[in-house]
Length: 265
Image (cartoon, rainbow, N blue to C red; front, side, top):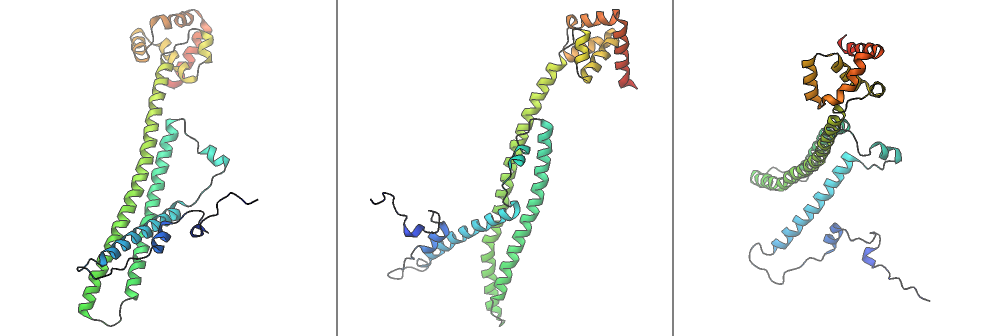
């Protein structure tokens, strides 16, 4: 029984099912005008085709530049986990700095590649020139070379602009994410600051920063306490239980004074 699968078309053999734009452009038959038209009319299709070809070749060169700069990297599981989405603003700040430093080095490499490419084009043009010096012809040759290199300079500038734009998009996204995390961390900090331990046991279970803040509050005078109440959003009813413990428990009072004096030493 014959297979129902369709056989691939011959023109796609060896191309993984795709017809590459450059090959397609090369394979297209060129129209030949039946009768000569006005001056420049016959050369217009040729000029358009050369422009398309140059654009395709330039895209290919830019891809090669990116592969040369970035390389091809297939990370393993550990590398992927290490590069997972950062959860702290400080991590993103470090990542932004690393990204900017890496971009500066990559731009230097891109400039080197473009310089080498331009030098190669100039040498090719020089070596293909006629060895006999003919000033009028030399002048015309120089004009032709100038016109020839202008698109190359435009392409180089375009490649740099595209590369720079992609980098800025990446950095802007990182900055936006970092600012979101900073805002979140600030909200969480204010919530933590607004909490005041209600007992000695709770104070002992807090982290050292909160212990120090509470200790400084308990050993302060009334005016300083008023400022701290306003600064951290505490209420008198929050602090009264621990103030009573501080006034009546000598052991706790000694611990508070020792803790408050650590920062002052």
